[in-house]
Image 1 (cartoon, rainbow, N blue to C red):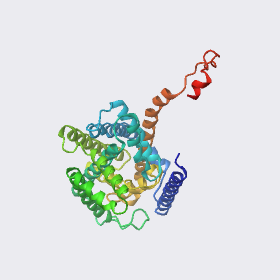
Image 2 (cartoon, one colour):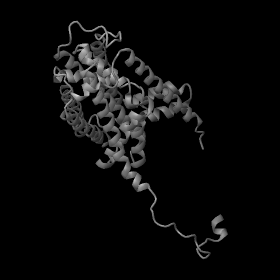
Image 3 (tube, one colour):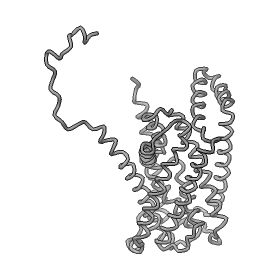
Image 4 (cartoon, rainbow, N blue to C red):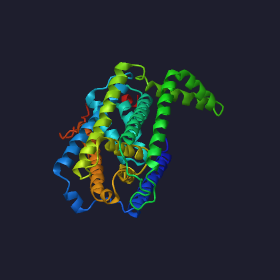
Length: 368
């Protein structure tokens, strides 16, 4: 049996780093006078339909996010919609709860346990999903920046944090270029996967031929997860649902913002807010995206709204958005996990009686 100590040390290190990131974010929010919890007056001004509408809209796009994975997995094997949704919801919650986005590994592990699909192949589909998501939300973010009118001049700080807001558009366009390059690299990798395997084998083979063979085999298995790329019957539904997911997310963002009193939030500004948030929580951070979530949304609001609105109505918007997104993710995972838990639970019937002497096997049969 392998020693669990190294795994525990790595888990504890990830947890410590994520908690440190959360503590830094909490310090930045307090230093910048950016409320984590808004005032009671700001929350009281939010009508019920804004919070309720956002809850329903986000639950819908969360479901869309889950079911679209089916078309990425289709070239690898058939998965029922119920099983796919259950695994996806549990995986999404793991990303939120586990430190430094370690939960990204949960979906491939669960799908491998419950189907004949390779875990490495499933991991390849997750990587493709991340690249396509990043490219699409970056395009919507750039489009929102072009079609909206930010403050002029842009603030030189977010709240009381000396962070020039003009960096946000530059970072957005840079991110768009990076994801476009990643998409091109992914397509080339799939089209020339045999060449990629040979290059990886040669690169690591000089250290150890066994290591080179192992890593090149894993690269080939990851490439299997990109099998949807040249097949329109798989790629087209996935891309359509991904577009619905992100456009619906932006619409839900606008609904909540207007309900919170940010009446200047049009659809393009909502795309910017959604895009800045998506990119802000992309990197490993604290459990629950705490800190990175709030700072990202506040930064997006600072592009378009004066400071007093950002820290008042904007604080209610940030708080409700965070609570709803986190709550929907965790509740969906709980509802997905409970039925399987019940099936695994032992029956409540009386214990089986011990076997009689006639039912006991002879000692020689036991030994055999």
